[in-house]
Length: 490
Image (cartoon, rainbow, N blue to C red):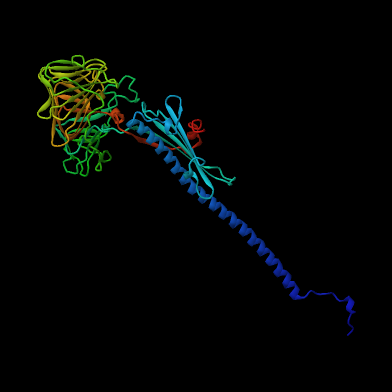
């Protein structure tokens, strides 16, 4: 056999070299895949960390906003309790005559310096800070992470609306029992829907009545609220047991069939406070002795002068008599302290006897003894729903701190007022159409013609009570925030 020359043979790569090349390519591909995976993993980790941090700081921002709101509420209620308190002396800046604003930053407050080089900032704006109208507060909180140029600061915006804590947030409220004898009617209306005392009040009528009449007892007894055959156009609450309803009794909104209880209008966890009453003591009282003849107050009271708050402070041992009329002069605001603690310290009776509160006037009564109002009753501006004054113009406070204070409201026409007596045993007679609110130890409504109309505006009546939150909103959208962007940029 003749072999070709060695130089003409075709060279062949060894199998080992080929395999080594393939392995190298595979290794390079694996390294590339691993590298890409690591980069992706690191980016995912960074994104997760950023998301986790923003979630953490999201909670922190909300806490800061809430802290700002609390600071504002403290200052508002401090001014209620102490008229000498100054917002501006406490770090706030005035905006016009009705508003205040304030800002906290990490440069002035070390509590706004967080971990991971993050800082916080709070801006708060208060509308109607002095409480002349219902205050509103808006807060804007920001948390910024220094060095993080890829993310905007975490922000939370919150708005709250306040109103005074009111003893009269419900129509009929008792520690013990509320009894309806016969088939009384309970409903509501709002005499001041715009919450502006400067505008004319709205009178109760078929066109203005609402189905928000509220009845509540904190008692856990089975007879805490004995509805019987009454119609409660609104809500009933008790401290534990369901209200007792007769065969023709009704609880619910207008239009509820007779004998029906709408379950969503009944609660068994009702609560209320019954603080003892403190008689105002800032000003000196003119002593009228025992009032037993028809009197114009304060005109006929020797030494009665207007105090710095615009009211006349008068004290008497008792007031009453048969067919005697006690008139509060037009435009006068009177505080009457009745000191007798035995028997009827207030005893209005006789066919023509009564208490008459003239147009533009108001009367606050503080008494620890029993109270009987009959005869013509208490005429707050008029003797009919169309002519009566707002319930807030006639306030009766029972100051007894133990035992029982008997309070009876009878007479002809209407009773428009508020009555607060923690130890009062109150009877509302069916011959009187009652408007306002009653808070007492126990309450009885007598008569098939008895009617009680709760004035919803009393939910805003707090006197010297502190403000509380009635509405809380987080502002999430750009449209919502734009409303307050100007006042919260400073």
